Length: 103
Image 1 (cartoon, rainbow, N blue to C red):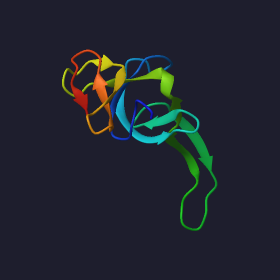
Image 2 (image 1 turned 90 degrees about the vertical axis):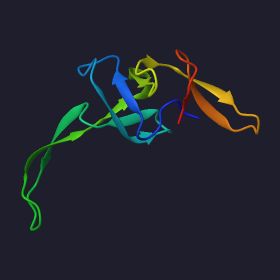
Image 3 (image 1 turned 180 degrees about the vertical axis):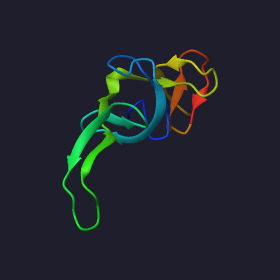
Image 4 (image 1 turned 90 degrees about the horizontal axis):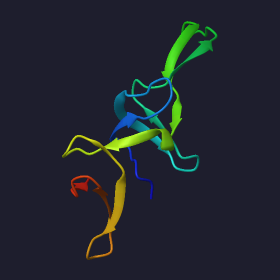
């Protein structure tokens, strides 16, 4: 179970986008990478086709999960998520700062 999921708010801790916040668009568990909205832009050159014009386009690239940190929705601070178990055995994420459950 990864500590970061789709639609989580995160802050970038290292790299060229250090300090920026964004929302997770996609998670790749096999490679431990995430794509975050408006973070880590790269340029791609596209050849023109009959349906699309060519040119240089910018898109978000993946960033390693160790370089981002989850923002707790309750205390609004960067935190590491702790994995706890409910009474029925279900795993949940808990904020280490305020102790609130992260949905």
